[in-house]
Image (cartoon, rainbow, N blue to C red; front, side, top):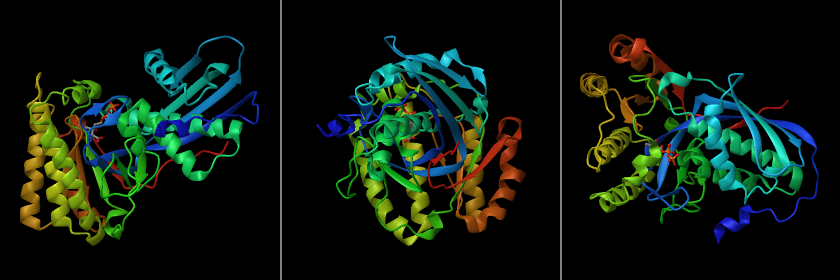
Length: 360
Ligand code: DP6
């Protein structure tokens, strides 16, 4: 089994205590992952822009112990967050086979998000990828013969077991996750760098996140993914995602924004169409989400701008545009779109290049 290569057979070093820290970004999917099977394996391939400003910083402090079982405490912004601990417990149980040292240490996990917890922005991608990177850094100190490629693949592999989309947050600027026959190296097990030519317009693309609804998710991603298993349109949807990814290959090369817009907006609306047509069905868009979409379309028609939108499993809108239109589109956002955001709030972000180790 391909997973076996993520099991290190021997640790050549011993470690008593220490701390490792990583900063890991969020990502925004252009081709959406919606539907999973087995242990967080995707039903279709996806591709995302890695972001730059929305990130999580995590420090993992460890100390050797002699007791049985996992022992850890989780802190968010300096305060103990027991509410997060069951999720980490489940994650540890799932990854222990790949990190057999987990039960030998007592951990303190300290995490800080660059975006407010109540922004409606999921912190699972940046949070899980930052934790996975810390754990792999620790294992690297125990095993020592790690290679660079293996390091990032294993970090992505472990992040995936925490939250699927987290495996796309390790590197940048464009990450593919899920096997695609036309994309060399693509894998269901971990995210890989998009391997073909990327037009420079996409390496500094802008993403402004309009905070339409800041409440906790109405429907958990896991529940949503599971509804795809016996969804009447599942097969067509998985095929559509695969086809759309194939159509993006020449677009990424040429920088053809009118084609880019068609594919990206269609993906966002298809994702929400899946939610509206599952049993049980649900609508995660809010009236202001639709208002914003209509305003973007009108603005594009009137100004020939290349601004477009995408959506995650929520009401917030990601407004995407090339850097050359930054001032123009940001004025439009401030003047026309921000009135549809909770307290007028939005977050300016752009394409980034992946996680960074924090030297202590
Ligand atoms: C709509 O990665 O949050 O954002 O694997 O259950 O943790 P789990 O799901 P998650 O799903 C994200 C779905 C999405 C689309 C995407 O990011 O591709």
